[in-house]
Image (cartoon, one colour):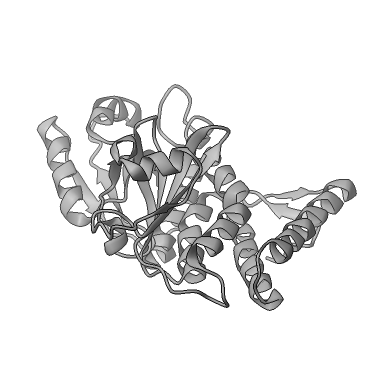
Length: 303
C-alpha cells in the first residue's frame, strides 16, 4: 500500500490523516535535524545524508516492528555485526528485545543493568560507555535512551568498525542515538502499553486481532534473525482461555504474551526464547496439569 505524504499508517493498518500544519511541522523538524547533523559533525554531507535517510526508513515500519528493525539499522550504520537492544522492565532489570547475532545475546535475555558497574554509571549519566579494558563480558560500546531521567532502552554493540568517513564510532553513535531517540522511545512506550489496551475484557489475554498482528511482527523478525520466539498451543479441554490464563500466568515472564487465535484457542508467545528453553516452559505447564505443544508457524502462515 502506498501512503501519501500527508498520511501515517497506524499499527492496525488504518490511516491517520495529518493536518497541513502537522505535516509542515513534521517536515520542518526533519530538515532541522539534518542541518544540525551536517553542521555539528565534520563528515562529508553525503555520508550524513545517507545515515539520516537510513534511520528515517524506520518510519515505514509499524510501531511493534520498530525495535526489531532498529537493531538491523544500527548494525549497518555502526559497522557492527553484534547489536542488542534491551528494554527496561523495571528499575533494576532489562529484557532483551532484539539482536542481530548469537554473540549479541551473550548476556542473556535478562540483565540486572544496575549491577553492571561502570557501564551502568555511564548510561545513567547519559554518557556512552566505552569498553576501554576490552572486558569480554561487556560490549565494546553502549548507550541508553532516556525518558526524562529514567533509562528506557539500552543499545549494546559488541563490535564496531573503525572510523567511517573520518568519523569515529563514538561520534557516529552520538549522532545516531540523537536521530533514533524519539522513534525508539515511542516504540518502547507503545509496547509497554500494548497489553492493557488490547486485552479481552476481564483478562490479561490479548484479543485475536491484536495477537495476530503481534505474532506476525515477531515471526517476521525471527525469519530475519532479529529475535527468537516460540508459539505454544494449549489443549483447552473443558476449560476456557480465561481460566487457563489465570493458572499459567505465574509460569511465564512479563515479556511473554498470552492470546487467542482461530476462534478462541489459547496460545502463548514466548519472546526471546529458543526451542530448548521453550521445552522447559512446557514442562512447567505440564506440572500444573496443562497439555501444550510448540506450534511451528512461519510469517506466511499468519493471515
